[in-house]
Length: 155
Image 1: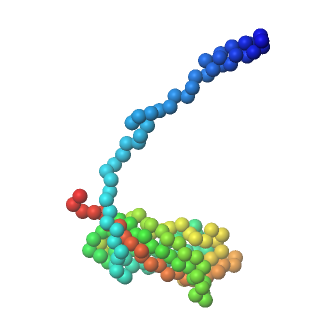
Image 2 (image 1 turned 120 degrees about the vertical axis):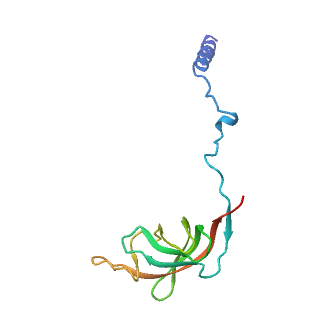
Image 3 (image 1 turned 90 degrees about the vertical axis):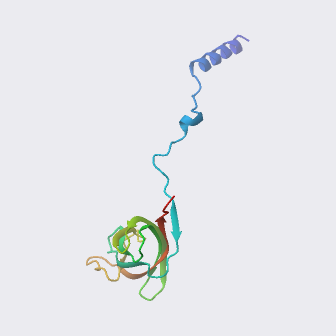
């Protein structure tokens, strides 16, 4: 009986010594927005409105670079595109969709980059220089613009 009583007193002492963790509550734990919300229009452009050109990815590169040209009269704020990768016999190797957030003014071109699909550095774009000291497989690409984002005006 004494042991049980001693154990209860010890447990009560430990509980009193270790206070419960205080939880934050209410509006103080909610993040406040740091800037105004941007509203965009999503446009599925006709073919050629946003042109992709100048693709490059050497064997050891971790990024693929290319140019996006805005042939419209309105600025584009972002471009969503799908890049398909083909071997030299036309067989599909991989496909990746990227959203590139960059302002492309009307009638202008911007150089952009995305992370490479080739994590092992086994491939090189067929128009890029082949590496001299290691084997590398050439490939080709086809790019398709899925949609563009434009800042919504007047709101």
